Amino acid sequence: MDMRRTLPAVATALLFTVTSCAPSEPPSRVGPSPAAPVASRQDPEQAERTLASLRRVDDLPLYEMTYVGAYDPTVGTDATPPSPFGCSLFVAAGDPGRPVFARNFDWDANPALVLRTDPPDGHASISLVDISYLGVGADPRGDRRLLDAPLLPFDGMNERGLAVGLAADDAATVRPDPGKPTVGSVRILRLVLDQAATVDEAVAVFTRHNLDVDGGPPLHYLVADATGASAVIEFVDGRMRVERGAGGWQALTNVQVVGVPEQRRRADRRYGQIAAALTDAGGVLDVAAAHRLLAAVRQGHTRWSVTYGLRTGEVRVVTAGGGERRYHLATG
Image (cartoon, one colour):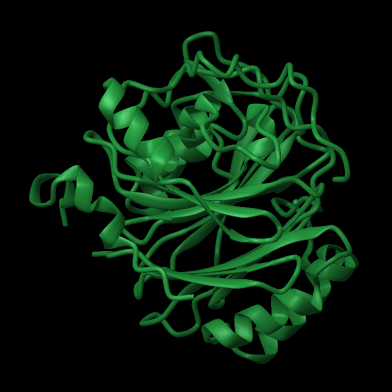
């Protein structure tokens, strides 16, 4: 569906019905100056409406914001998320009518943002952002660096039911192709959310770009779509490699997957626990069961746990303090 053509910008927030990964702030050098967002292509009125939509909803602290207008996802900030991330992700697609994408984001005690975007030339989406990497502190009200928040989704789902998330992979290496444009290893998620409706299209977005991991963590990625299809995308010996999901589920933690025997993957505690549970369930988990599994593998530095209903559009976020927020994204 094309919400951009059917609804005015002021109503965008209504498309997302609210129902109810450490320790120190990163230096202020990350992100542009408060008055100089680099991604925004908004007029002044759109920028002010975006900043005015910010509200605190949880003591994490967790904020919500609706981005009004256009942005350029190809530009970069100085943000360089440090290594290592933790993170646990999985897709439970044993019931093709109700596939669920789930993830724990394990990292520092930073403020987070639930961000709604509906760009004029891309898919509407809802994503989660650790706003500390924009240089934004615990009280971000009025901080214009928030206008660059679309550039740093750590996980998210778009209106086509395509979800993507990242995790650290210390063994990953990227060999640049001089014929391709280069984007940040986190910012690639924005391009996927804006441009891809299927796993194949998401893989194609990765294929068209070099990933810049200089100064930041090497990463690997899990992507899934509304059909229940999924894939892990990794960088092995400098080359991008893809492993498609099979058997109704796929999981990712911080060990390499592509080309690694399943038995060796399961030696990782979190991966092994997720794999055992999904195998026993035949890949069929409802949202409540998915959150129980996320809780079972959470770590002391898990900042948020989130599930994305790839067909239902249901988004459920549970933060480190136990607070829960629910959203609905019109998908189809």
